Structures are given as C-alpha cells and as structure tokens.
Image 1 (cartoon, rainbow, N blue to C red):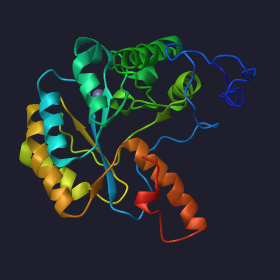
Image 2 (tube, rainbow, N blue to C red):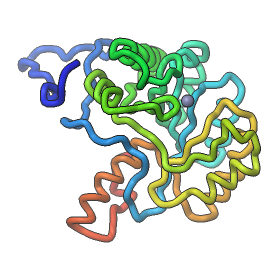
Image 3 (cartoon, protein in one colour):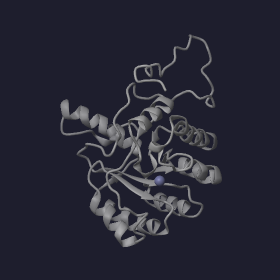
Image 4 (cartoon, rainbow, N blue to C red):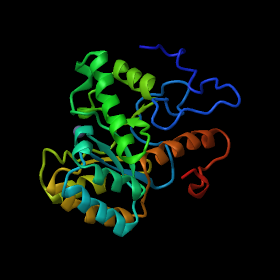
Length: 255
Ligand SMILES: [Zn+2]
C-alpha cells in the first residue's frame, strides 16, 4: 500500500503530444493531494442537505424511488452494491442519466475493517470498475457498509481510487424499524443545514416514507444536493468562514 506522500503523483507527468490513456484504463481520478477525514456533514449555514440511499439498486424499489425524485426534481446519492449493479445495470444507468450521484458501497457488503488489505481493495475495485463499465461514471466516494471503517480502510480507498469516505449525520435506522411513519419522522426531525441523511432503497417501508419526507423537508425550505455537491459547499464554506462571511452563494458553486 502506498503511503501518504507517495500519493501526490495523481496527475501523471504526461509528455507533451502523447495521447492520454483512454477512459477504460485504471487511471485514478483527480483527487485531493492528501486524505481527508471521513465526511459526516457539511459545516454550512445554507439549508442544503443530501439524501442518500444505500444497498441498491433494487429491481423494483429503486425505479419507484427514482420516479419520486424525478417528480420533485431532487437529486440524491446512491451508494450501490457492485453485485446489484451487475444484476441491474439498466437501473444503475438510470441513476446516472437522471443526474444523481452514484458511489461505492463495496461488491458484497462486508465489514471492511475486518478484511485484509487485499480483500478491501478487491471489494472496492470490482464495484468501481463495474459502475464505470455500465454507466461511464467514475466514482469518487466510498460509504463503508455498517459504517465499519478505520484509518486502514480509508487509506486504501484513497490510495487506490482517490476516494473520500462518506458517512452520515442522520440515521433513521430504517433497516431496523420497518415503519414508514417513524422513518419519515426521524429524517424530517433530524435534518439541519449540511446534513447527510441515510436511508436504504431496499425496504418497502423506506420507499413509502420518501414522498412525505421529501415534501416535508421541502416545505421547511431545505434544498437537496448530492454528497459531492455538499462536500464542495463544505470546502467553500470553510473558506468563507475565514474570508467572506456569511457563506457561499449556492448558485456560484460547481454543479
Ligand atoms: Zn449498506
């Protein structure tokens, strides 16, 4: 495993006039020069939040969820399991084509912190490559299953793919409480500026909670963005704390 400091060569020295490698080669994406801490929420004052869905794509529930999001013109982030992408590539393509973010939730959903370095890398690589193969989308983030992460997992994710590690700040425990009213309430009550809301698009009770959750949060003036967008806002928000309060103009942010 490369150590931090050896990872700075993320922009290879390509001699002038040579053709850059094609998209199917395993070139790391542009990434921060140093590994950042796991991301839980954005320190921002604007009412932006990220809705995230783990463990799909599910053959029937994920398309229903995508319909709900499209009806409201809301973008979300999907932490997909690679073998589910392999089984339902058309749904993965739909996630990407409708403007959502897609990110890595491993190939088989193990607790990464218990695996060897090699197996961690393999879990990430297979999903990274499968998503790229079927959607053309180059993933930039990992959400570790069960939140089971540590410095070693984060370092491998960063070294191999330039990934940030993405956690969450609001957890309705929807996998445990298969109760639509409860899931809705926990998400709505838990939301605050910069929050990352966790849900799973493999439970019917969760999908049933989505319309009311989105509509109540919209009524409370929250605005939904992808996790990638929230990360960008977090960075500019920190700059703004030093340079030009009170905060970033959402319209000025990269999309
Ligand atoms: Zn999961």
